Length: 192
Image (cartoon, rainbow, N blue to C red; front, side, top):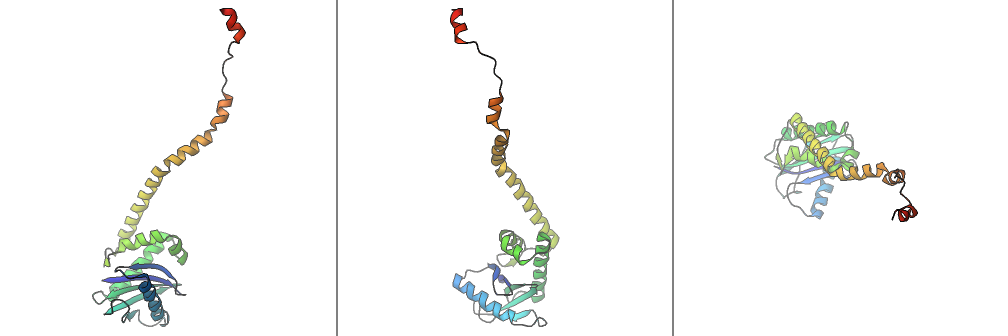
């Protein structure tokens, strides 16, 4: 089972944190600090698997990570998960992000955190792997984007109506209305 997914930059700043078990905020910060210290001091040409020690639950768990540009993608897993399977999963996650954001970078993770969590939710939920086929993941994300655009159209309709009314310039149109000349009051008195 996947215990946590961490994306941390080269300076130790977390850019994405997803814990699949409840930990206090202090414990989460400690996990992030210690995980970053373990991963960042390793050389680039060593194995991407690391025994986690006693960070999470105090029993057997491993850190499986990949370092891309300025980001570490770290999955904390228990012994039931395959190391190579998780490495492939990290690759699928990064490639999916890359396709969704067209050359994903750290800023995309910062400014589009909700979308990144949605993408991650299509891949992993509750610590269990849901989908590894990138085409299926991308299709689900495109479907969600389409629904969001439709909802944005519905919710934006009142605002569009108000702006259309403002654009009509009603006050000027009222001034421009040509009314027929009304008979004067003196003409009306003579008629009676």
